[in-house]
Image (spheres, rainbow, N blue to C red):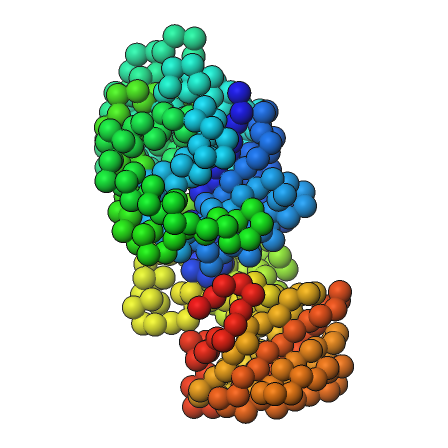
Length: 475
């Protein structure tokens, strides 16, 4: 049996703002151990038996960061990136992954669909559940769900009611799916004993899920076939889905499209320490606590405080005489919330988006395929950035209509193009880039390149870029 883990890496994780933002979402968020949720999920996938290849379905905008996260220790050479031009929920993602897997590995390949931003702290129990699910999927063509045995009357999850047991398996027939319940209903489900949380993780053969789609979502499958046919190899191990036909796919979950309609669905009740890390309270629960129930990350001090979580990225954060708080400090935004209200952080993000505030989308440090830049100062008429270009990378050949730029090399060697000129700049050398002149920065060396950029103009937005050529396929 060949097992193919498919990791769905999408969503913005708005409840984990200000660390999770649109340009650098929840799967890339690092926990106390120093690894990101995506890295931990990938490691968990590679630990499963009979795995020689994995796939990650993610947005094209995150392709470079995903590849960077999975490099080396998690087996990036055997990981394919299936790249969506825009987000379209789990049904299109699963369908396209199944079509790709069938073409590459055959109809009998067993897919284990995982979310990139979940945490599991009992890997042995997880592996046992996957083995049971994979055997059932292969033997009977079942669509198997992993249900989480509830530990509390949680109202933030969907529930699955299970019925009759299935022979030679820990799985049960699915009696029904239940939407997120009221507190009263959730308590009733907990007492009943035959309800589990819907984890959003699945196991099935490529043939079984595609047959179910043919029966219950034929229009979606028809468009997905067209997308797959028109898609192209973007880079080694990367498949870029055709943008035009992809836009015709419906925005629908795999639960609504298939699972709630199919008759061959099974669920395995699981207790492998699962968490969807859906709030800062949940993040705090992954950390070690002191005698007062406090947990911290980064440079922090707590005095006379209880059950409080502090997280600091680059400066000292101190709290005195507080209880049940989360305090999240980033270079450009600070969140202070009661632990029991941490689910409401998404309302802050919604307001920031309505107001057009940049912190809903970007951090001060913004990652790009060629490296990253950090905004050091942003004021009317001028902006200062630190630009770091990775070895062997170059920015697009571009120009700006509303700003000029001054570049100063502080570390490494830059090969710069300004109009018809191509010059090499060493540390402490600089060059001026006038408005509406084509220009490019390249690091042709094996060492890092750091520059300081000063922008001057009436408008300094990132959308004032006209690209003429680009190594990363950006328009």
